[in-house]
Length: 169
Image 1 (cartoon, one colour):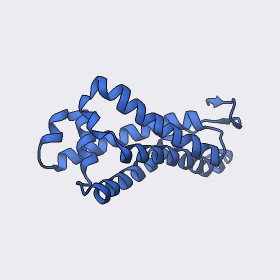
Image 2: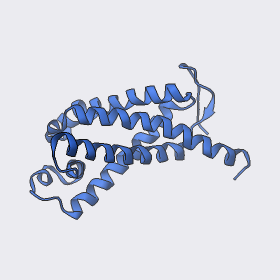
Image 3: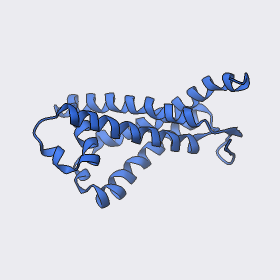
Image 4: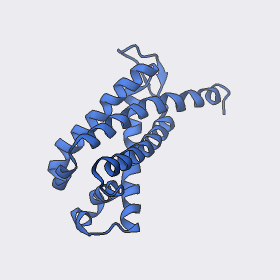
């Protein structure tokens, strides 16, 4: 078991790796639904636009300009999105482990904002130059919400697992 202790009022508790992965899935679902709704309601754009962007990370820039969103593009976008969500959930678990709810939610939102800036202003320009088109208020906001949900979902999933851990299951 890996235990992290330190600043920010952390309690000494083992990291819940599965809870981190689960928190990534929960946050990934919230991100998708919120992002799709906002893109549609604010810009009148296709709510599946997230799928083409996520798929472009694996399939290349050409899927952004295909003119249609195929089932294959949506499937590829889902795989990319949830692989990244799970990875970010686990990273969030390491960073937010041992915090109380309000700190985990607040620092989780900052974690989401950090993901936005790293993905779109560091990794994106180097590896995915077309990602510049995705900058904006909606992705910034949905990344902050993603991080906040990672923080709160991680604590909730970790607490649900704790009784099973104590009983030896």
